[in-house]
Length: 326
Image 1 (tube, rainbow, N blue to C red):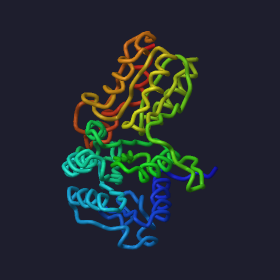
Image 2: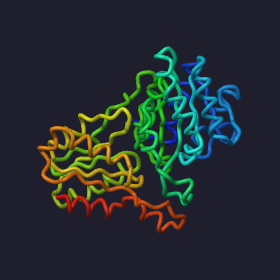
Image 3: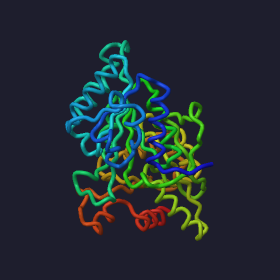
């Protein structure tokens, strides 16, 4: 199977869906001639033209509001917010309009839109361009939330999200854009359902439950610990909402020890929800130790690269926490 980058996989997913659906449009800042802040939309302006790939003014609230209105009136919309930090500016339209429209009108209308946004640290972009805010949007009923960790997942999940009749927040961690992985070339039949976790590595001694960039780091830790004959299972939840609770519960039952890892600040992070899924189920009676969480430190992301690298879970911290758990 051919290998492409995470960014190329997202580009392919959008382009294929736009070829298949003439009512699908793409709007955002610098997505046209410039090709997007991270080069994800290169070539799309030339193929689909300015009516379907629309550069917008710098106003995330207006961009998101336009997408909500367009999606309510017959179009499907992909929105690119240049940094996920700017969800703070778009939240009124996203949380109070997109998420609630279907409920307000008794299911008579829908908002088939995908809001894409790169997030996470590691690029030296400092406090206001490096946050991980997935817990904010996951808290809003009516929104679906997806964070893929591989090019394969990025393409399959984005195609599914675009076809969904509900608003989906599709978060992409910036350091993944240039990572490569195998992705099928076929188009129409290649989708990954939302709400289905993926066991990226099978194991029996302990489980790491994670998502996004932390999947790759957790897999490295698991491979290193295998040299000490410690067998770690790594689960990539991929979809926060809907969440594959069954997968988490079954793995917790199997290994008896669970570590939740995410890049976002630990306090109020989505890891707390993952813990509750396990301890509120019959998996609780299979646990040999309390479920542990390892999130980012509760501080703004520093600009200094040395400090920035230490704010989020590192291989060393994950390894130390796992050994403590074991």
